[in-house]
Structure formats: structure tokens, C-alpha cells
Image 1 (cartoon, rainbow, N blue to C red):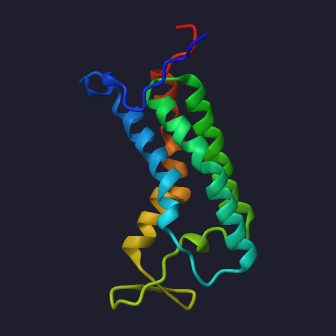
Image 2: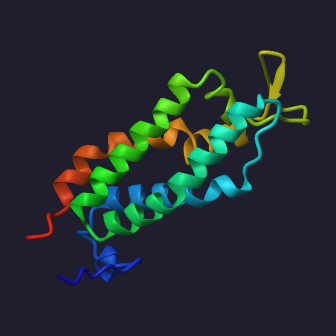
Length: 154
């Protein structure tokens, strides 16, 4: 059985292509590569190590599932659900899981949270693109993913 996978399926340009699949596919792509430009500071070594391993291990599956969801594959929807739930476990069960996504700031326009000056724009971008907000947005798209994907036999 040969599976045809195109990273940029031509049907995504059609007006009837579900925008939710397009958005979820790009969110998964961002989650797979954007962490390379992210450098958390002021965290315990164990938290940094766990965050690095999580991001490294999730990179390839997120890219594969992003391509799959843009090609309307049901297995990709299941994969994104699993990756997002596991990603949320990192924030819930690791002591410094959420502070790992707070970006320190040296500018005047910053929020002071727990003796840290936090950049609101970059923190929101980190939470959205590589953090738990992105996982929550992917999980919010579960109905659209399953409504607009197909099993291998269809």
C-alpha cells in the first residue's frame, strides 16, 4: 500500500478546504521548529533538560502530523491529540513547567511576576507557539480535525 503524502497538498488552496486543518497544521509546524530559537533562563537544570528532551522528541512527530493533517489523514489527528495531551502533562506535572515558557525582559514595558520581569509579547508568543496555549488550541480543534479527516480506506 503506497501512501501519498504531500507537504503542501494542492487542495489546501481551494475555498472549501477547512481552514481549521490549515491552522492546526501550521500550529504543529511552529511547535516543531520554533523551540530551536527559544532559550529559557533562570530555571533548574532538571527542568531545562526535560524541556529540551520533550522538544527534541516532539519535533519530528509534530512535523509528520502537521503534514498528515494538511493531507486530511485521521492518524494525524490522533497523533496531534496525543502530542498535545503529553505536552500539557509537562506543564501540569513538572514543578517549573509553566515558568519555563516565561520570557525575561530588560525593557521598560514588562510585567513583574514572582520577582521576574516578563516580556508580555514574547511570553505570549512562546506560550502560544511552543507552549501549553498551542496545545490547548490544537485540542480545541479536535472536532474540526475528526470531522474533516478521512480514514485510509475512504
